[in-house]
Length: 248
Image (cartoon, rainbow, N blue to C red):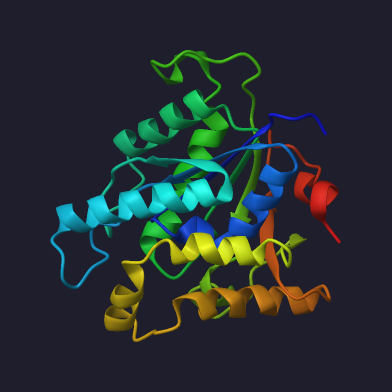
């Protein structure tokens, strides 16, 4: 596999990448890929004590540090928490990001997940990955080699869709060796422990990540794994590149 291929995780909030696909991003980095970590929002509603501007600043710094731990570059598209929508301005932001990053592989949320920011981000990533290569789609130059990338959807939070159904997973990646670094990256989001405890009643920020990874790991007889569903519609690549690189 040639070096300098590019992977982009485009997810809704700071810490979503570290929670859902951080181990796979780390494996890609270890394999020589360039890594970009993008969030639609700066996490401006993720606090019970700070105003939206202060918590956005705090979380942007945390996500920059977390991406660095994974070996990636952080981008924020500056939408607002709870208000991510599939509209023209948001689509344009995502197209412009992909125009600049030129990803070979995009990872985003499951189409059906526990909150609408996730579902809208999934639609935005799908739209932008399909269209960013059209010459007239953006004011940013079309970089040589731009093409429709591989597209993968993360395992939904807690491993089920909003109706309690299991997702139609296609790909499991062993991230046992990467989980220590993934945990360190997730722990860089220090502001979120108090928020999740107050809002979700969950005082196990890191353990909940490990629990989901352990659930998927058990399915392939390893300690920790991350699971994905590959988008294979026209004109996306049909071969499972993650399985070819790292699959069991």
